[in-house]
Length: 159
Image (spheres, rainbow, N blue to C red):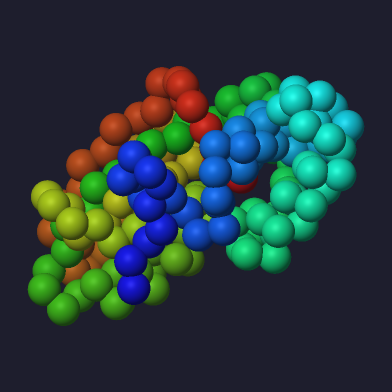
């Protein structure tokens, strides 16, 4: 089944019908607590239009929740790194199970390309990150890790 396309031919997420939906989502990503009246004013539409669109976007699964994000002071605690992980053939399941036990592991994705997995780690210090990378490298089945420490987040839309 193909994804819906706009008149320009670009794909869009299911449930998002037009530029007004995209702008509404953009505003909510900036401030999920924005009132429907303020959203309507910024979009130049009636408040009831915003309420109806929010209901439709939620029902379609385009919007699955609202969240609280920590301010920069809390988010800046510690150090974050992206780690590319290469594993031996057929060792992926065991490696993933062992990685899942690390409380510092924030995300783990299987990826195409140079690495088999890409991990996001957050440690309280560079010393802990160094020890964590050593522990990760000692997992049976891990061939190689390559890490990049995050210096600054320029755009962050994760929750």
